[in-house]
Length: 323
Image (cartoon, rainbow, N blue to C red; front, side, top):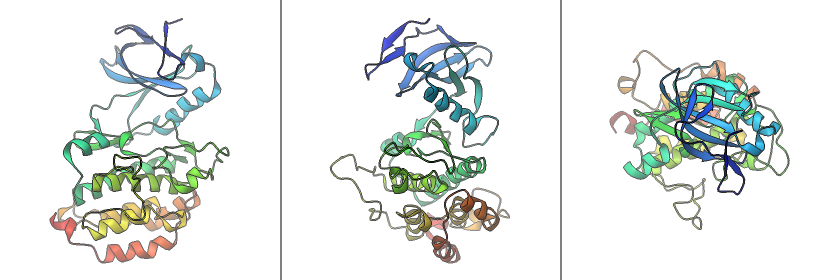
């Protein structure tokens, strides 16, 4: 068995030397991070001749069902379902001596780093980010899964395009959460998620909303100061009322007051001047009515937000046409 070291939490971690075999066809490059059950490495795939990300069960978790379940959720989320905002799954060895998955390496900075180094996004860039992330959620939710840990740290920007990563917290829609053990990251998790209610699509809507708010204002949920946590219902937005209204709707404390993913996607698309959209001018996103019903049945149940979103679309603000 491979040599082991001690992680930051005092539990064992794998201690691969650079160039040493990790799993079939892949040698180690460097450790990227460690979680309670799994650790993540940058590796080199000899068959693909490219860098890859390898997520492995930690030494003391190799036979623990929860470690394998975490890896299995990654497989369910991205395996065999290509999407431009999701990484590709290259291989999975859930029953190997070291359970693992091999995922596409996304070369780029995470969104929080981009914001820190370059400042907040403008209105059109924020709306485009919303469309891209929501399109990825349409794919995930359509397969009965929720991501449940959407935050700037889990959005990697490659060549100007976001890639949503880290599906270790993904769960099936409608699945109960164990009492006292909510998934997700505090501050980015919806109120009903922290209350351990059953998994719903509205939880991801809230996560995207917090992420967009951070991207647009340049302020983290703690404003870089844990003692000055910003209230989601009263953020210091720049002057951009149409975009603000949509993001605020996504941050509603009650999931019934948030738009569904199709409704939000349609609303963000329609914020753009049709002549200046970064897609064909003849293309529109008016399929929300037919898809929203499926989204509601998956667990969001949003209804009261629809009329407000329709009003926003009908009175599209000019700032996205000229920013």
